[in-house]
Image (cartoon, rainbow, N blue to C red; front, top):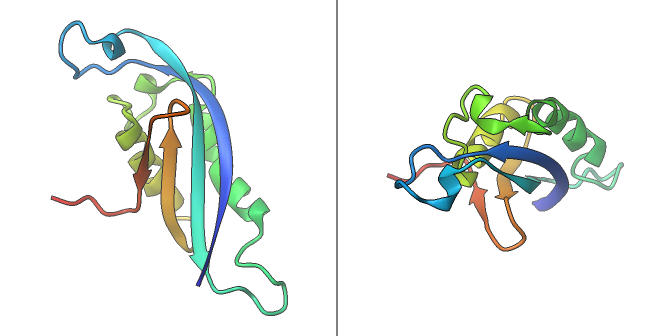
Length: 122
């Protein structure tokens, strides 16, 4: 099994409505988000790849259209747009169209982010 990934970036604003009063993230602010989509599968012996990177790009495009230069709190399902919720939101939509999806990484800063692999542990 081989893993591949494709990185995407988008700009968006949000606020976190459920943090304690006075928390800086309760105020409207923006991020330059980076999303990394990882897919795993066997390498096709003829093509020499797991999947065309263009297929990953095509799968993410409708989501990018909903996220880029948006106020994330207004996107259905992202009323509390933490990195964790955003990663799960992306996963839930990609798993329907992207075979072999194994991980979604959302970075809201160069030092902070979330990895989601499709299973919420209780």
